[in-house]
Length: 111
Ligand SMILES: [Zn+2]
Image (cartoon, rainbow, N blue to C red; front, side):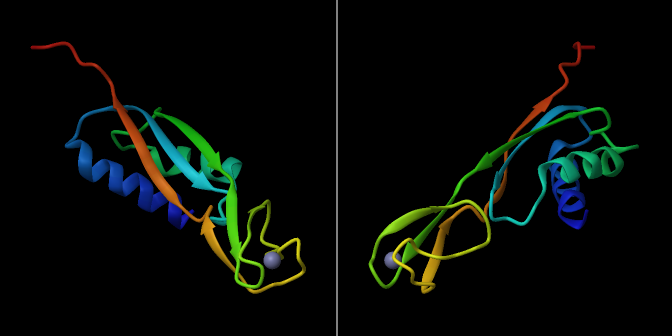
């Protein structure tokens, strides 16, 4: 909820009061965020703001980690960070990001 709230606050800050039609997020599989929970929180957090009724589009990006033992890179599907070689001495290289990649405004007719 706190993460969603900060995303909403950030977008509200940057849109200068214009109504928002949709927000696109890129969320890494290892960011610790559940997309469905985020959609639910988004509805609550946007109520009464310029984002009310805006669509939330979440693109999940896969996790990647690099092994210090065998120097290989491999996909990480969950928070079990184990290299196929058996080593747990790994470093996450992708999948922790949470980025607002695009914000679309409602087209308002010129006055
Ligand atoms: Zn390894």
